[in-house]
Amino acid sequence: MNDLASDIYKYGLRNVAPDDKNYSLLQEMSLGLQPRHDPLAYLPREIAEMALGYLSFRQIVGIVRVSKSWESFVSSTPRLWNVLDFSSAVACVNSKAISTYIRNSRDTVSRALIGGKVSQQTKTIRHIITKCRALDQLDIVGGFSNLKLSNALSIAPSLKTLIISAGSEITIDTVSQVLGHCRNLDRAEFHRLTCSKIIPVWSGDMSKLRSLTMTVYYDANGIHALPIRIIVTLLSMISCIRELCLQNWVFFGRPSIPDFSHLSRLEDLRLIGFGTRGYPRLPASLISLRFESSCPTVGNNAATTIALEHPNELPKLTRFSARLVPLLSLDMLCSFLRPNIGNLRSLDLDGCQTIISSEYKVFIESGFLNSVTELRLGSPHVNDEVAELLAAKCFDLKSLYLRFATLTGVGVKALALKGGVRLEFLFMVLCAGVHRDAIDYAIAKGIHVKYGNSLVGSNGSKKLRTGEY
Image (cartoon, rainbow, N blue to C red; front, side, top):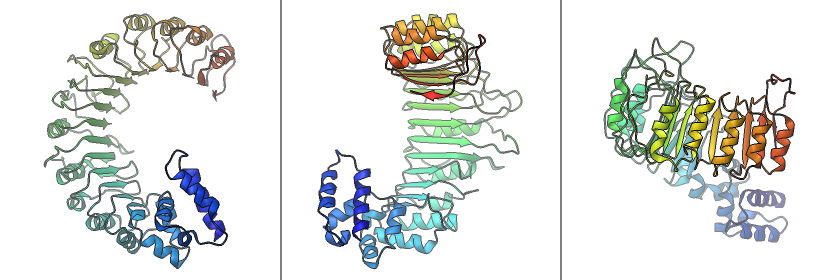
């Protein structure tokens, strides 16, 4: 028993930060523990509860099996059962066990994580929602298909967060019902949406929804295009949204461009593989904006064919990403960033190859990157001249990621040597013109370097292995 108690204290000391108010107390009690003392009997109850509070749910369930006295102690401590985490269960969790855990919580369960090992999945979810009236967050982490949640979630008045991972399928029609029923939802994430023959009807009060993520999943059977009115109607229902991510949404034919400008509280917008032929109108409240073209296409509906039909004034924007958008022009880029020159902190242009070297130089000299601390560029047009200009003009740059860049050791040494910029991190992927001596030079200057080449430079330079320093 003494060895077990010692192991518990060692686990606690490893997982509690030294500056935690409980660290010194754990250390003192660990040193003072006498041989062959049951720690749960020896320690004051509040100290034992505090120590057990650092264990995972799976470990708590295991402790119940140690002895009858431990089972009694743990089962009579409601705070240890506030979070029911079945996500890592390796054996089937039956309804009887779940009912016991809920009873142990004394109606204080605030979060439940449901995995594929839970038996009678939909029925169990409804049981948890029914019995746990204080349930605040529900995570469905995997192993489910064709989830029918709308009826179950309609009786969850306190539920504020719902996360359905990519391991569980749910139809867009079901999502529309869930959002209509759960009027107190603050955050909702659906990472594997499937299309059904039923067109979703958005209804109900969604005024409390602040964060929404919806990713459409396409299987081997092909792509199911959606009518554009689905997203247009949804946008009209979520006027108070602050974070919005729409991924892999493909629409019929040549759809009109949705208007996001009325979302006056929207701060973070991510459109990844969003199948329209242009940039939408955007609200001036945006702080972070991400475009990424990664979805399949239907007919003439190409997500990468973009045009700037509506100018956007984004004076609060500090983070902008246009990854894998090959037809992004310098004019388009400047239209997004011009209102907030001096405020931008992060810029990601990885995969945007239509901006040539001379345009990069104009862009840098115009001051668009003066305040940027994190920069990602993935283009062969990033050469030594561009690197030298970055070194001379971008005084706040701390992290630089380069992919397919054609710079050589000259550009790397300029970034490490010149006083204008003080890099902390330099990432280079498939930059075949960089030799090992330039990497060593950057390391000697105190820069943390990651690199990886799978190509040999045209000059016969030796292939570099992936490394980190």
